[in-house]
Image (cartoon, rainbow, N blue to C red; front, side):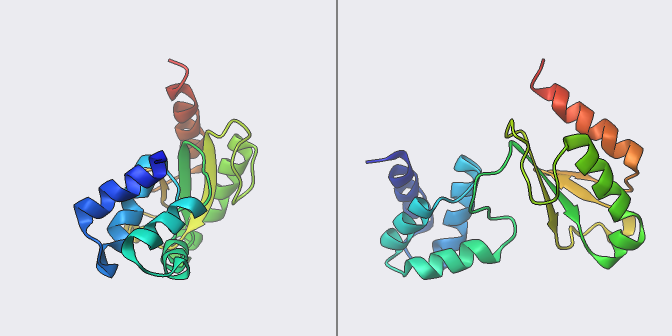
Length: 157
């Protein structure tokens, strides 16, 4: 039995084998593997006795359920009108410049992935971004450059 099969079995044992268990199982896969592979989707479908298309449809519907490998630090920049009006484009340019990648890409060292996402819920403190589970608000390009430098240093020490 592969590690993916074992993980899926553990998660179905924990959450149950009903259709309602699909989302918590997908979230469990993300917590462990940081993305949901095609193989994991097949195993989930088999365990829950639902179609692989249903699993794939659910996994690809939610922007926080990644279906391809991402960097260690996933940066999600809010793309709502409020963040746009408050300087989101300058934030995005600072990120692209500091990481040397474009939106949707991952750095060659697999450390950072840069994505746009729908509302993060911080409109009152726009512009906002999320790095994994860490929220950053009221951003300026200077703040973004420092945040990126701090994250780059995390793995050196």
